[in-house]
Amino acid sequence: RTPLIIDTDPGVDDAFALALAAASPEVDLLAVTTVFGNVPLSATTVNARRLLALLGREDVPVAAGADRPLVHPHPHRARYAHGSDGLSGRSDTLPEPTRALDPRDAVTLMTELLAAATAPVTIAAVGPLTNVALLLAAHPWAREKIGRLVIMGGAVGGGNVSAAAEFNIWSDPEAARRVLAEERLPTVLVPLDLTMRCAVDLDWLGRVEAAGPVGAALVGLTAEYQRHYAQSLGWPGLVLHDAVAVAEAVRPGILRTTRYPVDVDCTFGPGRGATVADRRRTEVNREYGVDQEQAVDFALDTDLDGLRQFVLDR
Ligand code: BDR
Ligand code: CA
Image (cartoon, rainbow, N blue to C red; front, side, top):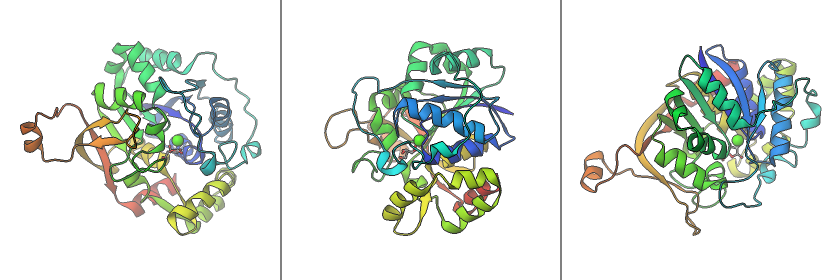
């Protein structure tokens, strides 16, 4: 089984991502680390702990990480999509955690798990990339222990939080730049271009709800989030962003990828937080001196129905 660490800011779609990982026999979920994002760190952390309690996975430690971006603090949150508590105002319907928060911070816990790992570890990062950037900056040796980074973030054809930027990258562009453009780890980036196509409808949600108490509790967290996405989709349903990335973490190859050199816009103009993919042909790139090593695998396609069914089955 592939050792997996999930770095997350729950978040309604993060909740589905955690549920997917917790129910996937291909992975050994070593830890869940939390980061500020959709709501402040204190809320994402208690949400992660409650979700693991719901999922019967309190064997998995939760450690809290960064409470703000690396360089430029900003007050932006995604309450408009995920509700005041990050879970549509329904986090208090989840069980109280019985396991204490891990006393270590996120980077320390990740570091210790990586040091002890005997197989390459996958890190699935589905919030701002602050914790991952700190890990790689402070512990360069950790690169050798990471088999793959699977990241929900970025956009090729236009953002959600701004015209150019996707929320996770926009939340800490300097961290994202470090992780995506400088570290050169084997990375799958799962951008909005794909995740927006992985929307699910009320029928799908009804089937999750009918699957049992865990499914019903998860669907119970979606009301606010559904309201937000009903507007952007134009039909009642929601988008599974983070679960799409975790699907790739548990089943490598479920998403189809194309490799592009990438950089992250860290300026303060309208492009801040954009993931700039260089989609010129490889030969042309060479001609222009584009660094092919500075490339990540963009997940831009999948069997959409197959993916929805995979998440539903789990
Ligand atoms: C990303 O932003 C967050 O609101 C979601 O949880 C997801 O990780 C989508 O842009
Ligand atoms: Ca998230």
